[in-house]
Structure formats: C-alpha cells, structure tokens
Image 1 (spheres, rainbow, N blue to C red):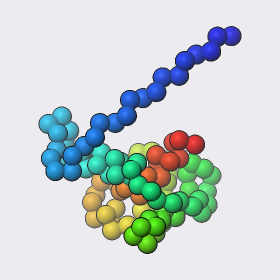
Image 2: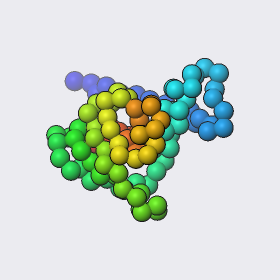
Image 3: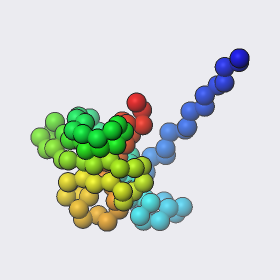
Image 4: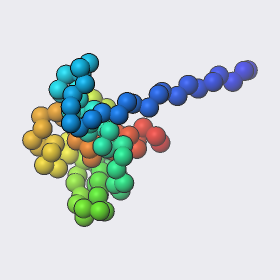
Amino acid sequence: MPRTRRTRRPPPRALSPAWCPDDLDEVDWQRGLRSQFGREQKFRWTHLDGPLPFGRFRVENPAAKTAYEVAVRSERPGDNFCSCPDFAGNHLGTCKHLEFLLHRLARR
C-alpha cells in the first residue's frame, strides 16, 4: 500500500500586541495573542488527574516562580479553566497557560 504524504499546517501568522488586524475582531485577536504567547513560553506542566489529553494540570512558570491549576475539557474556548488572574478577568475563555497546554497536548 502506498504511503500517503502528511501535509503540515502552515504556522500561524504573528500577531502584534499593539494593533488588531483588519480581518479579525477584537475577541479573536485577543485569543490569538494568548495562543501565540502560550506557544512561545517555557512553562513546565504536570498532569494531575483525568484521562489525557483532558484533566487537571499544574502549569508552572519557572522564571516568574508562579504556578496555576488548569482544567482541560475540550479544545473550545470557554470549556476550560485556569486559576490565573488573566483568565478570571478577560472573558475570553482562554489564557496563555491554557494555550501553552493545548499546544503541548496536541503535539503528543
């Protein structure tokens, strides 16, 4: 049987934190920024419980010496939770800790 060639998705475009692109609304821009920041972070994560890729996790930032509890229930914004202040106040349903974890879990 011939092998099929896997195509890779192109990397997401870089978003500027200074201005919202014309083709995005403000919510999608802010979610995109958090996704971008999350992919770039050098966080550490620990799976606490639940069936992978879902469950409860601890996400640590060694540079800032902070750690937050993250619950991953799906890939959709709003279904997940993070104990960080940004998640509590941004009304976007995501943050860089969640985006970091979703990116890492998708690579497994």
